[in-house]
Image 1 (cartoon, rainbow, N blue to C red):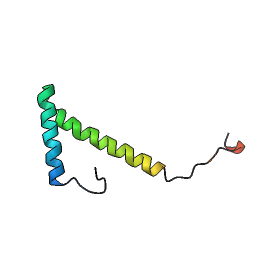
Image 2: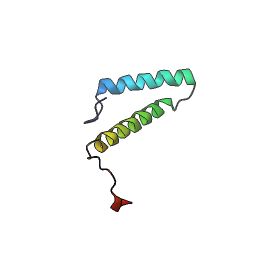
Image 3: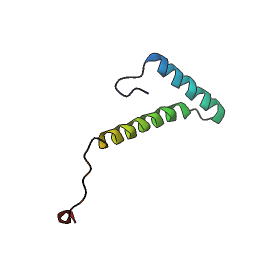
Image 4: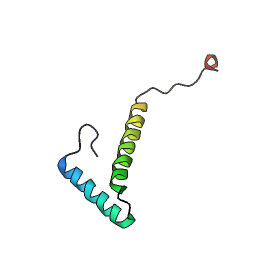
Length: 65
């Protein structure tokens, strides 16, 4: 999934259809919204990990303790 811009129409339609099918199986009309929320959180976590990976690792010194 691209994180540098908005979701295109084809991607949006795919996720809507996927959410609709999940909702049919689970009998919960909120499943589509839950799918988008889970994707959003996953992207945010990945972005945080990617940013954190750019920082230099530092070993604590005696002064830090």
